[in-house]
Length: 222
Ligand SMILES: C[S@@+](CC[C@H](N)C(=O)[O-])C[C@H]1O[C@@H](n2cnc3c(N)ncnc32)[C@H](O)[C@@H]1O
Figure 1 (tube, rainbow, N blue to C red):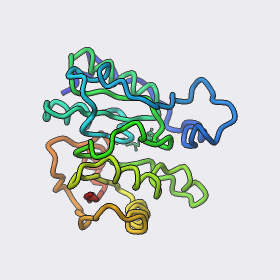
Figure 2: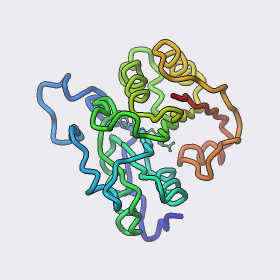
Figure 3: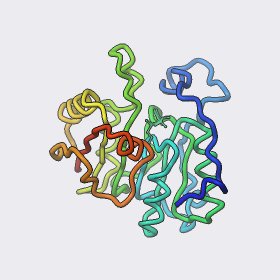
Figure 4: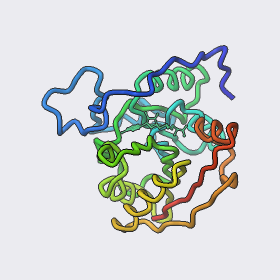
């Protein structure tokens, strides 16, 4: 749906500073390239109807899913959170260029929490193909931990869902064990293959489909 001749995709570095994956509170001096910490969300600036987000795309990357989902569900306000500023600027360029009132990307590191989102306000959150950080000593860089699960359980409406997808079985094992140990969310079975329940797929999902890389998804419901 995005015309890439009109919106050429920017070059992005895959490896960014580990500092971006540490909370602002753990750092002595915040560098200028650290995403601002949000305390109060200016929803009226972000969405045409001035209302808060109802759908989150956590780690939205290039925003293919965020943009498609916002177009498919005009009644939802879809907010993408992404630590790489270049991608956020590009996504918001498309949002503004196409005058999409219900989509927005925010330059933000998830490790700083979502206290600025009201309890029981999010219908659906997506955490799709997160950075795997495969080495044990790098696990602490994963945004997904007990605090993250508690935070999601707090902001989801009763019955609301957190969708998870990954092509790394060890990432699913890790996330499943964190959810089970934390409580507050009930896990669905693991679905493998292409039975993705949404019309749109993420950029990473499309990549996996093109290259025949198997992936699996599940949801955790409040
Ligand atoms: C492998 S990409 C997947 C992007 C997209 N969800 C998809 O499926 O195409 C993972 C994304 O999560 C972002 N990310 C990783 N840690 C993050 C954090 N702490 N806060 C915000 N975004 C983060 C990365 O910058 C990257 O764009």
